[in-house]
Length: 401
Image (cartoon, rainbow, N blue to C red):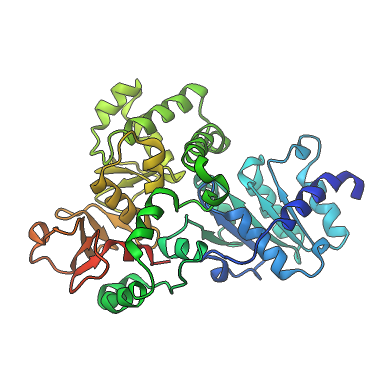
């Protein structure tokens, strides 16, 4: 192997780097310890993992040839082996390699372990769109890597990405106590509800800017790609099963929030109960659904979810024929709060966060009737700029990261 052999990879890397913008960085960027020898970044397709890799390369390396970015779904690998590439780069002084779409390469877990053990001064950063692929492989790499999760844009990030406002993130416990002051600081600068409505429709996936009017169509296309490409890359499923997963997603999209009858769903899909549960959890882990259970989700022992949402509000607009205001509110809350806490289904109310904080989600006329006199109970209220006491504006739960 020589540089002529890897020129197609270099060309793709240089083109991508040239178009990388450094002006806006995701919340996770500064939380990653980029200095460790093996860094993994997982997340749903389209949330911005590749951009973050390119930003780090562009900001860190004066000589871009000291590092290589390569996507492992590149056709170059049809005729070349990853082990040969890494050996060539290492022997030619490249000590930093960034692998994208790592789950698309066969035996990637074993190879990363081999690279880590065989090249002691090599630094590797890798990403994978299919969350389940990386999580299924954690056991082999857990002692060697630092693993991070990137989610879609929070409402706070959307405001910054749009150039509307730059506001600090706030952790949940602090929000519950100091939300009024935080809200007043934000609403003194911007008309927050107008921007919140737009975010719910088009602001979760960063590619909304380049997609323009085609954004919702592209969201639907990405969902299809996840089922057709990402899930089969890591799960041994047939074409028929992939088609059933698509049907299942659309059945749920038209009926969210669904309090599922698993046996009825199984009948619709002509599947067994166990097969239906597996498909539901695959969609959850792939970032297309949000399953709410009465205990912490256990992906090894699948139990019937109590309630099913689409993963985020943008997916609702892309896949649902009708968008219920109430469902959209709950979907937003689950998506944003679930990114930084463990959500479960309580006996009363809508959501329990970390087994401690109880939430009911609703419009401006919502009262405490359903969760009256319960400890640590709060209302997440839409259509208000500021709250008081345990009534907190819904939009503020989009400022947690």
